[in-house]
Length: 175
Image (cartoon, rainbow, N blue to C red; front, side):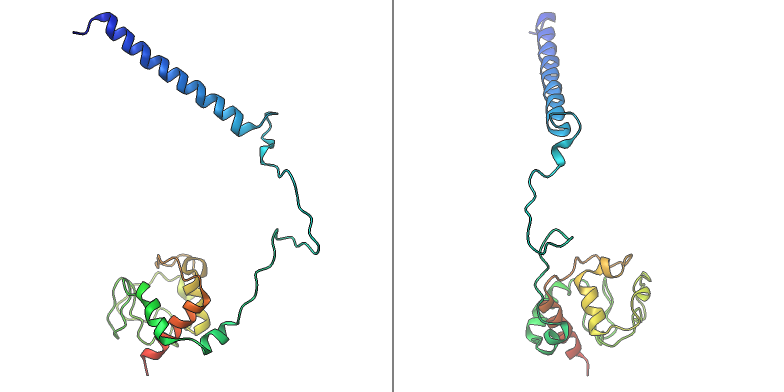
C-alpha cells in the first residue's frame, strides 16, 4: 500500500507547506511590524486635527451631569431593587446572612469591614471608615480601582443613576 516513494512524497509535501507558511509569516512580520523604512514609523499619527481651545487630554471634556447628591435625592427605590439583581448572586439582604460577600443589611452608615464572621481582605479599611453614600458610590463604580486588593470581583456599575438607585434601596432596608 505505502512504499518508500509515497512516504517520501508525503513528507516532502508537508515540509514544503511548512516552508511556505514560515516564509509567509516572515514576510507579514516584516511588512506590518517594522514599516517600509524598517524603523517602526507606522505608529506615528499621519494627520493631527487642530481645534480651538484644545486640551492636553486629546479629547473634549465629559459632559457634566447632575451631582451625586441630586441623583441620590431623586433616586427610585424600585429601580434600585432591580439593580440589586446584579448583587444577589454574592450578597444577601438578611441581617447576619453572609454568602460569598458580606450581608448588606444596614450597609449605609455601617463601619467598613464590620460584619462578624466574614473574612475581609483589609483593602477597604485603607480607603474608608464608614459606608457613607459617597463611599458606596465610589466603590460600586469600580471596586478594584477604589480599593485595590479587594476580594470583590464585580466590575462595577457604570451608570451613576443605577448606583444612586441601589444605594437608596439598600438604605431603605433598615429602619
